[in-house]
Length: 216
Image (cartoon, rainbow, N blue to C red; front, top):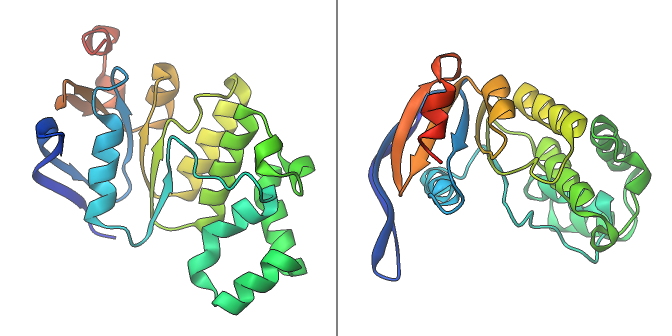
């Protein structure tokens, strides 16, 4: 994959500039954490990156994008819908192929979600729903992951498991996070967003607590 580049990019809402102008280059192989207060512009920045190149990207949106009336299996399987024909997908909706069940099962096992395979997404807890969205992205695959707070509803061990799975599968990740300790452990680069601009952009190992405090 090529680098992700934003050149004087900005976003407007209601005639007001809410983000930018932003100049940003994310190179292949980087694991980037976006940090900053709620409303600082992290989600908007992810949207700008997604608009630049949707191919080879997986997305975990903050609203998760699950279909509550469908099972966990079907929500995870949706990660690969574009890879198959409409007829094949329709059959899997009605009576899933065994090979697809096994493939989804393998992903759910990584996240301790296998018992929920045939449970409707609408019946799950907030943390379980979040892990289903993560499983869908892992099942989808690709080179780049964009994720908006993918572990906000998870406890410590499960957060670690999710971050390990995401940063292992995807060669490049850009993840908005509120857990700063987790961000520093799993990201090679921290980008701090403040008032719609990039206020910090440093390798994770060189970011001090004082640097982060200034963002909040």
